[in-house]
Image (cartoon, rainbow, N blue to C red; front, side):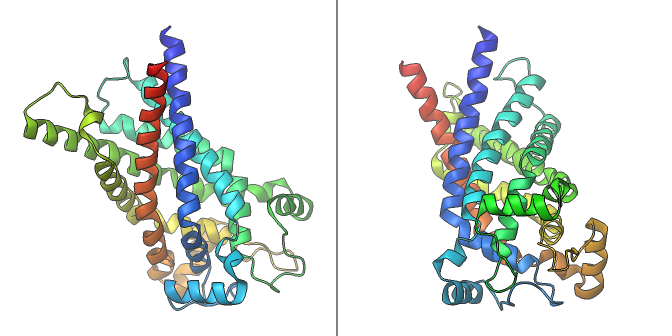
Length: 312
């Protein structure tokens, strides 16, 4: 009975996470395209045009590539985000349950950190090919390649044919380092959530209400945004390294960057410390509301699923 309840709990979290991921991507994808293009804009023969700022990038892409340019890589982004968030919440809550005797037990920050890192590593291994294709489609500018990818499946087929299956895992190293992003985000989120619940209980001088009942959508949005900012400040350089590694090779088949350390050396040499924070403005514009949307949708969908289940 307990095992069946735990399995149901995991799948409810996975479903809520998948819906949250889809909603987030559908809302904010153009800013993701802009961030990706800024990240590879190193001023040394970049495959994408140079943009002055986020507003200039939006205007330029819309003018020369149309609305489709702002939604380049949208389908793999939706697919990848839906799968990633679904798997993330599934693995994350499974890990938390494993480290806790009962679901209501209070885990320490260290266990939240380990649970989030474990979930992030597993998701990275499962989804790296999807993100690589998404990145290449977002960087694909008309006339830059002799034969542009026509879509997700064509990109997968072409990469396998021209570069081999290992190419689908370019950037996996930085992606695994990026598990610290999710670990930091979820740990900060959980600890802030506990602190807010504690403060609200003191304000109303009651312990009879459950913690979730005390929090509003605004609380979830604020907590999600605050945890996302904390994670971004520490881990953004890994995103730049990963994006530069995942660029499509030139027509002679030679990648611009050979490995992560090559990216670090070249970026430091030609752009300095600031090079590792290219696209940070559009990243903040995208991810602060994205984190809020994700957690608001996740928490409310999870409540709806549980209410529907309990009602039956």
